[in-house]
Length: 93
Image (cartoon, rainbow, N blue to C red):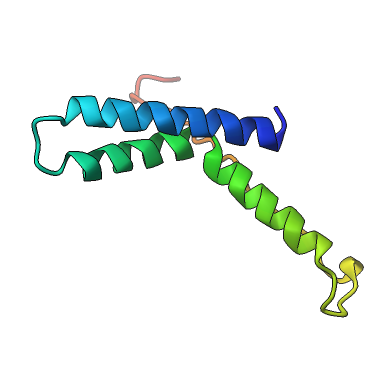
């Protein structure tokens, strides 16, 4: 999925999170705050933050007006971290 498509999907998820947060907390006096937090959570969970950071990264790469050659820097990004948990019971041979 392209970054623009991912960003649009994350915006749709944020809109859904906003509506869900509002409906879920409609009896609370802080309904707007809860709805905004829910929207932000869903935006980040569906890849919106990665899409925004990717766009910023592209803009910074294209802006080479600082006189520094592109070959001097090596770009390294961590986008996903997977953790595997194993349980040892002591009965393994």
